[in-house]
Image (cartoon, rainbow, N blue to C red; front, side):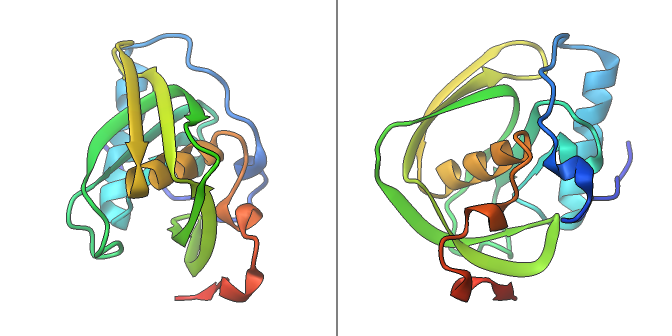
Length: 165
């Protein structure tokens, strides 16, 4: 379909709360997901949220297989996740490096829950329910933050780790 421009930190639309998707398996939804997929692939990203390309809907995609940006990360299955709900399965958090296509060229250590349950729907309206840990849990939390208008620098607890790659 099309590679879209990824909005950068400072764009006010990245701070908005995204709307729930009400209709599944529509040509418009499939087109949005294809555009997101093409954009994420072109940017070599691990995930992308619809608000990052200017669409205020609760849609995220993610997936990692041998990504040069994340050389030590385990594989994360390609997933389309709509109207997600995340629940921490532990109080334990882990700090690790994060970057973002909307905050290019920078990285920081960000605390995230180490084990989560997420649920939502795929583009056809079929339910998704998963318990995940590690990098998979980090990616889901990062992408779903975009749906709440949160960028990873807002989660940094020690700004001494925030800087250019």
